[in-house]
Length: 293
Image (cartoon, rainbow, N blue to C red; front, side, top):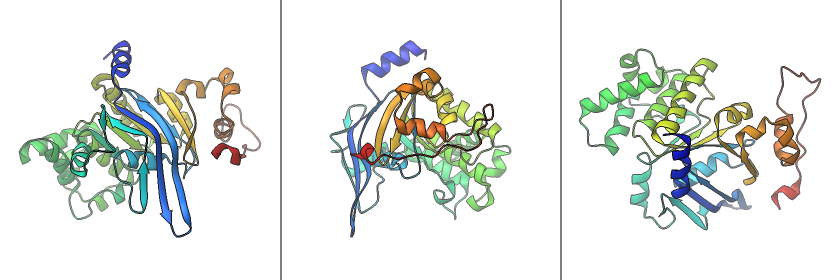
């Protein structure tokens, strides 16, 4: 799909629309606001969400998938997938969307994989849940998916249990499991954090191909501003559950555009080490309470 076709498709109907999304946790000491009035639309693009730990990035992804645990409460003025209202959709219909149409790669695969089943069985199950397929076909598709995420000897890895794979391999297994159903939207929560640089680039190439060739929408959650500015199309900068600003990813690296950036965005950029221009000390963030007002 060329860029003009992608833009036209995106303008006709966004894959995802959020308006004033809020995630609150009711605790004995009061209400904790994890996400505060977040709004954005997602087309067939790579949308990055960056911010410090605790800024609400992962909670946003979980809220979209209806995975906020008790005592959390999700509210929004609008939350739709391809025009379907997710807020009024019953639980059974919402579960059918998960995995098949909207998938999420969790941050730590060790806590997402079933420890008593082989990784291959879990990938095959993810395929058979959403497609009418035999066990043989599911195994063949799973092996092909393992190979696609750059796992050597996929037949051997297929028979391994989660504790027998490394952190990086476990991350690739999770990515394979989420991609095998061919979703329209993939929410990737730090998908390359456990991978070395070479494999990281290979995984990013796979994700990029899914967006540009198959028209998938990608929400890429990361702490790595350098990675996001080089890989994503747009970036949402979050702090304290709020979006400080949304900007084209290329502007993060544009020195001439930085004067127009939010102070929090400039603070994040200032904390990054620069090998070409080393500093005696890295800057520290000065957070203004008014940002959350």
